[in-house]
Image (cartoon, rainbow, N blue to C red; front, side, top):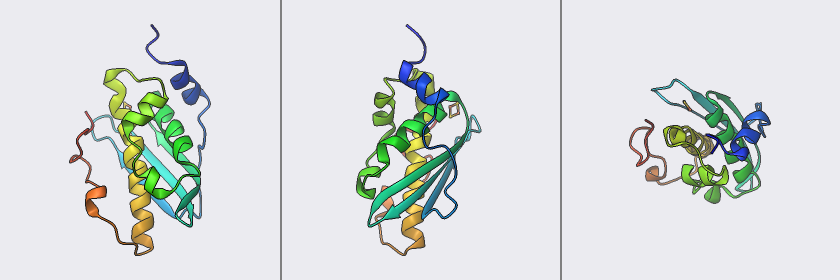
Length: 143
Ligand code: FES
């Protein structure tokens, strides 16, 4: 069996939603301390719904494919739904990642959460801090 699924290869070769939103309503940037890869997510939000999303990922193919898939999964969705997106769901949507690449999908989940948190902070919207654990304190921390 090939190391990477066809979906991973497709999203790596033709990533969706690459780029920058200059007037983004929320921006989240996260990095993996061990591999040094960085992911940045930009959100446009209207009435609690993600109307547009773009990403910049300086990282491995799995991180790029995860960003692409994750942005597709949250586009047009309410923030409450975007916050429930897990790296597991992203990995499943990609038809799997090799075990040693699972941490790459964690970056996508964390970058989306960071962007939503940034939106809440900018707009003085109250939230439960437990929704946004600091890097390193979540159950599926990077390896
Ligand atoms: Fe760093 Fe994939 S190896 S995110």
